[in-house]
Amino acid sequence: MTHSLVNPDGLHDPVAFGYSHTATVPAGTELVLIAGQYGSGPDGAVVSTGFARQVKQAFHNIGVALAAHGLDLSHVVQLRTYVVDHDVSKLGPIAAAVQESWGDEPPTQTLIGVASLATPDVLFEVEALAARP
Image (cartoon, rainbow, N blue to C red):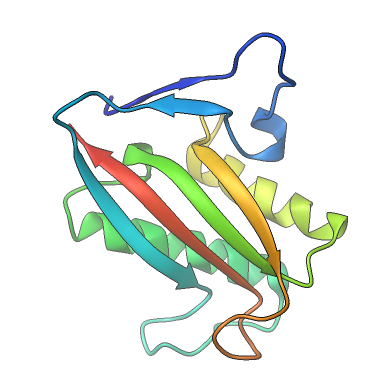
């Protein structure tokens, strides 16, 4: 593994919410930064107006970007997610997509509510930091 995750005693268990509290990356590890990915197909058009579908596609796109570097989702250490008009109802689809992608070992993650993203039809964006051993 390229990194280790720790959810310390004294902090709530965040795994059901789709993230871990901390991660460490060994010295000498190459970092790969993935720019914000949104729910687009290969043509750049948003695949759906539905929030959950956009989230799922954005995580798929992270996987495609990682594969270009010979990596996969298991190499992701950190996510930064951006949610247009965030409310609690949007946590479920995000947590479900993270669970589907990382299971019981999700990367660290910060969620940021925003007024808008690049275009009006983009409802969700995610950037990633991955580590190559």
